[in-house]
Length: 413
Image 1 (tube, rainbow, N blue to C red):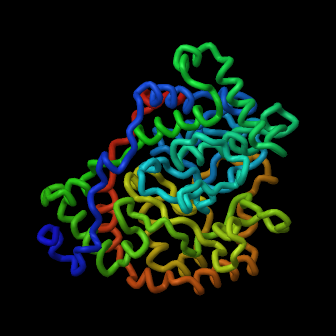
Image 2: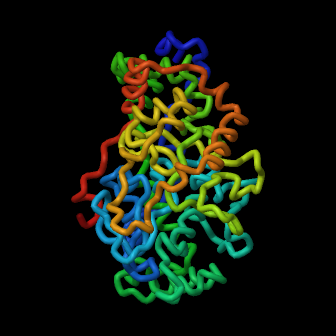
Image 3: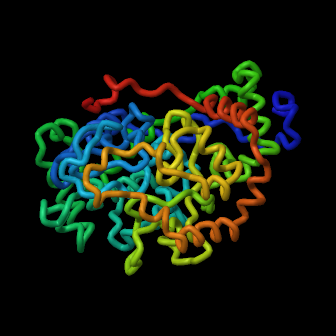
């Protein structure tokens, strides 16, 4: 490996290639069931949105929007409009690549679903159902009962009404729908239909279908010196060298799975904490209630990152180049950032205007202070030139697998 990467002074920082053995094995029937469930709006409160609506394979398992529209929206991807929805989502729809890998310990931008001491720690607490096959299955439970994602309002349907007070009851109602649906009876003849068997199947499908392995980078790590172009290899040497990217994007998943403050501009409806009078997003702090975690977000995994724009927990940066420019100078980027390049649905209703917090000097100071108190300055030591950025983009593109054509995705255009 050192011979391949002679320009890197610490070749031991290079990870092992991501391999099929890094993932679980599943029965093909369970994967087939999971695919049907993943694309089925039956699981949503008002039967109008599926997992695939926001995690559209055509958009790299996102939706191509900085902040998308959940329950009540109409259309798919960047053509999605509000319909009866009232608000944008609080965060960018995270990509699904490699979320089923055995090494994964934390999911969601704030890590609110995590594996700790051999058990799943989630917002459901003691209501978490038994029999889950993975952390990914635990994660899949929560969009189903989130008001703005798939459940809808309590006034609209019985699932959303139940979810207000009792997650187990809401999940049970979803399982009842699946059990009663004729199309699932043939696929689940010997399966105890409950919420665990449903999300286990969804997790099996997502794990198998959205594995980004055998990328050019993985082939290079496995010993093929021709797998990377000269430009991509120059980017790799920057990534694992003076640019400092591997300080956070480490290991086989290219993520330390920790939380960092990067001074990403604040906009959108926010993920407001209980009793918080401001519609803001404080990131990991909403999970831990620790001020040291204010405005920190989990380091994303990077395989297939070139196909998962836009970037940041709220999609503030439309391209990889813009995201890298921000990494190069977070404070300068934060203070000069403007919303003109953000990809959002058409905002016909002025009440939906998502950029009010940009003019909040107090909130901006809090975000910059959180960045200043973090160790990000030590992790981001290099001012990147445009040439450096081009090299890094070439390397990041070498982490790609082909996108899934729309015709094969199951998503209606």
